[in-house]
Image (cartoon, rainbow, N blue to C red; front, side, top):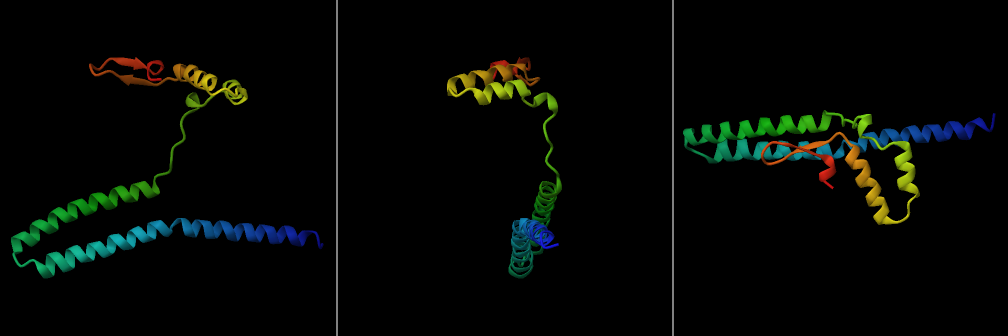
Length: 139
């Protein structure tokens, strides 16, 4: 029974550390949200509502600000809550190519291996006139 205690303790510490890591990961988001809220208050309340006296100027400033503010909040929201997407399997290096690359010590040969692999990728770019160019000509 004494052997099970250290394992339980390690699991509890590990779980606690993961919880702290998740909480601290939101710290930059919280800081940015507070800065945005403060700047919103400073611009809308202090500048537009208190400082400006011309009603037409107030409305113009507020409309432009709120359009830009909504666009910012929307893109920031999307950047936080959109999960990253992994590239498809056809873009991954094969096991044989990876072994060949990792076993090679000379950097010039490693670059040559990567160039060969890149030529086989299904990636295409467009020329200035709109024609397709294969990925082999990129490297």
